[in-house]
Length: 81
Image (cartoon, rainbow, N blue to C red; front, side):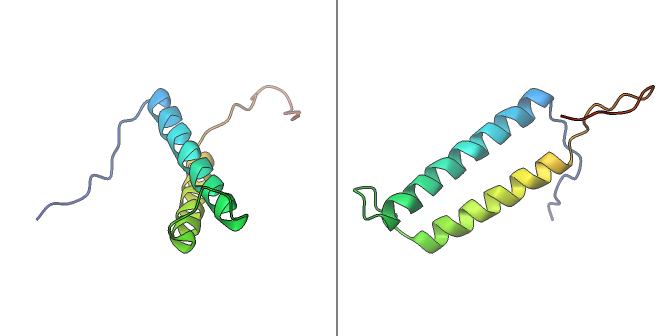
């Protein structure tokens, strides 16, 4: 029986491409939801499915963000902003 691969070899560029595709899909689904709510000429076939997809994409983007390692200087205090 086949198993899932738990080790992925993706570059930073691959991750950027995945994140951009997810953001674009989320934007299109959100636009369809807004259009259907305002009775625009862009009806959404199933608003509940689209809303669930937007939530799943948003959650996935958050998990990808939380796995990033951001630069923090080791020799001096970090001043954000």
